[in-house]
Each structure stands twice: as structure tokens, then as C-alpha cells.
Length: 593
Image 1: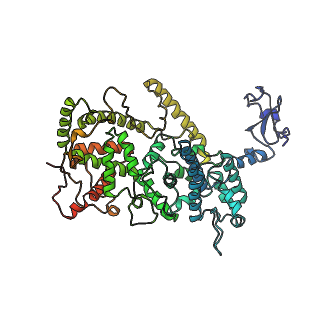
Image 2: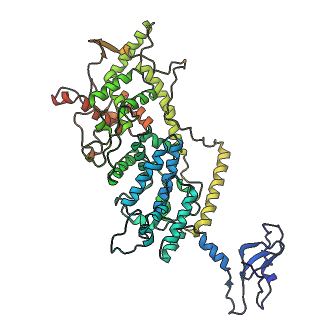
Image 3: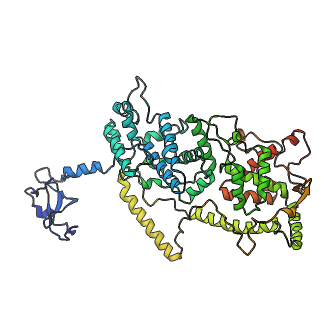
């Protein structure tokens, strides 16, 4: 729109209005300003119009009344600065798409994102009546509901499918969909005001009961991803998924920074999408099972012995990572077969079936290794050291076979490595910056104040960093399935993969059996997991230190509490010694004295 030079009333001229404005023009660097009829400054040299306005005193009106004139063009721009109308479910859809793309970059098959995860998400939107649903007859129109926002949208499934773009589409397509929401939704004027300051339904979303129809949260996005990974039987366990989240390979914390520019975050949206805690294993795991039952999903594809999630496969992986002998894999397979925890019906997820136990594949495999270590070495703080000394003596006279496995030497190597890695992990957690690079503000009025404070914080951090000589945070590590790596090429003898168990075994009836004839149970009676939360009580002071060290090792590898591994150990023990327990044999509940 063409601007005309303003003529100020009898009290002065346009020159008087520009007298105190001495800023240089951004285009030509001249100081030669005039005033438009809208009250804005324009450069007489290059005709550049700024957003600056002037306050003039008009003597045609009552004295001491000041009138501020703002052009219509500026008012229109102020409306568009708020961004497009968007809904909370669209924000979660964007998060899911980013997480799926990250998983695909880590090597997950494209089918997981384009078919499985998208269908799960679409089914969730339909079940929660946010999309892909018909409005019941006689229901009143609710302005804040996506599926009820327009009769035209509900009656045309193709247009509604455009509203929720595919997870594989680009960011530009999502912005187009936001515009489509804005053009099709018939919301009230008050709702439009809220949309300019954030999502349309953010406030209403927080008012809902969190347990009602599985309200979507940030941890639930990882439950969706894990459910899709389990459906396609990928080689990624839940513990690996959460570790990749912590290492920054999968977007989770501050993922809203990558929202399209038109999707503004204000007020309630910050409470929904801004998280300041790491997702817990139990929360993501339990929500995944609740989601599978809520969506009425059929039986998941079978977990057979050729799948990576089978205990035999996972035990091989964790034996390598724990630097234990390869021969121990034969013992883990025997335990899996004896306890029937490798059966297809035991491992395969059947949503809504309350009679079957929820299987934590990675924790189950770690517990199998712990049981095998107890079978071979007893782990009562006495017998394992006697066996280690015996193996050491046999190693001195062993000149033909490979070295015999010594538990004491393995303990020293693993404890040193574990202490160093645990310290690094604790330091990284302590130094993690929870605040995002993109400042957040609950209202537009506080934007300038928040930006100013943020700049002050950044400046102070840089100054203190230079004074203290602190190093910059290290880059995120490369994604890997193994946290601890051991090579047999090392000459220091720190790798035990090729060591033999013959030094602690004896031949009986043509089979190698453990020298240890005894075994101590962690508990004689299992608790009700639904009531107590655990199958058995675990306290560090109540069990031998060697047993606690093994739990601590796998607790570090899986990033979970030792008590959860202890639960699985108790479950396997009761399956393994089921017949003897029924006969009430005299097994102790604690370590052998």
C-alpha cells in the first residue's frame, strides 16, 4: 500500500515529528526521515518505511490528550505474527515423525515409520475421537474439538486425512495442513485469540483427566515407538531406545524447538511439550501395554528363536558386553529351555491378555545370565573366590588349552571399568542443560523480558566458563548397541571371551557340570506384582556383595534399577526349581553360610 507524507496539525509540521529520531536507515544509512499518514518513519533518500511509529500531540482535541496512530498494515501484520491455528495432537504427531525419522537413520526398517507407527497413531486418533470419526447424531458442536470443528470436514474423510499428514511427509506439508485447519475450523473469536498465543486446545487439554482415554504425553511418544519396534521385531530393545534418547540420537527433550515456525508455543503448550526429566523404563513399558490394549491390537508377530528379542540371542549380546566367556552361552540356553521362557507363547505379546506376564526382553536375558553365574559360582562372597583361586592354580599348569576363567580377575577388570563409566554417566547427567536454546515465554508480553534474561544467562555462563577454564561439553557419542567393548587382541588380558570354564567344571556321566552342588534362592515365595509392584524385596544389605555387583553391572548396561533385574531372577529361579519347591526341600532363603 502506498504511503503518503503526513501533515501534522496547526501545532507543528512533519519535520518536528522527526526531529528526535536520529537512527540511520537500514538500507542506505542516511538520516533523512519523514512521516507517513500512518505515523511511521520513512527514509526520504531510499523511501524505506520502518516499523517505528511516532506519538504526536494534536491540538484539535482537548489538551494533554496524546493520540498514537498505527497504520492498518501494521495491525494486519500483528494478526499474522501469531502463526496458524494448530492442535495438541498435531504437535505430538510432529514429535512422532521426528522420532521415527531418527530411528530410521539408526537403521530401523522404513516399514516401521511409514506403515506400522502411522497406523497405530491413526487408530489412536480415531479411538480418542480426535480424527477419522463421525459425529454422533444430535451432538452439539464443540469449537475446541478437531473432529467436530466443521461438518464439512467430518463428512469428507479425504479432507480429514489431509488434516493429519502422513508421518513421512515434509515439514512444509505440515505447515500447509496448519493452514488447512485454520481455514476449515469454525471456532469462536475467543478461540482465535488463544490460537495466536499457542495451540487451540492447549488449555482444555490440561483440564482433562490424565487417565481418561490415555491422554497423550511425551513419554507416550516413546511407547508408540517401542510398540512399533516390537511389531516389526526390530533389534532394538526398550533399554537401548531410552539410552539413544539420553544420548540425543532420538528427539525427546526440547523437541518443540524444531516445530514449524507457524506453530507457536505459549502458556499451556509449554507444560505439555516441555519435559525436564528422563523417561523411565517402567513408565514407557507400562504405557505401551496400555496402548496396545486400548487400541484393540491383535496378537503381535511371534517372537521365535531366530528373532533378536529371543533370550538366547540377547544373552549372547549381554555376555559379550559383560566380558564373560563365550562358553557360558551354552549354560544360558540350557536355563532358557529348562524354564520354558523361550517359548513363543511366553514371549509374544497378546494385548489385553491379563493371564500372561508382560515380558521385558532385555531384563529377562540379563536375569538369565545372573542365574547362570549363581549356578556356577554361587555368589555368596566365599565360594566364588575359592573357585577363582582353584582356576588360578590350574592355569599355572595349563600349557595346552586356552586360559581358564578366573572370576576374581574378571571382577577387578569390570569393577575398574564400571566405576569409570558410571562416573562419566553421572557427570553427564549433572552437567546436562535442561533449558533449550530457543527461549520459551508464557505470553507475548513477557517475550522481551525472557529474551533479555536469556541473553544475560548466556553471557554469564560464557564469562564463568572462561574464568574457570571449564571445557566445552563433549559431542554426543556415536550410536552403538554396545556401551562396553572388549577386544581379544588386547595384550593386557582384559578380554575374557575366549577363556574356558573347564577350570571350574567337572565331568559327570559324560557331561560337564558345576562343582558347586548347592544353590541359594533369593526368596522362597513371590509377591503379587500387581499389589506390591515387585515380585520380591531387594535390599543391598540383605544380599552378598558379589551378587549385588553383578546386578549393578547389568543395571548400568540397561539403565534400570537393580530391583527390576532381581525380580526377573526370582521368577526364573522359581521356574527352575519349581519341583523342588513343591516338595519343600530345605533350600535357604539367603546365601550359604
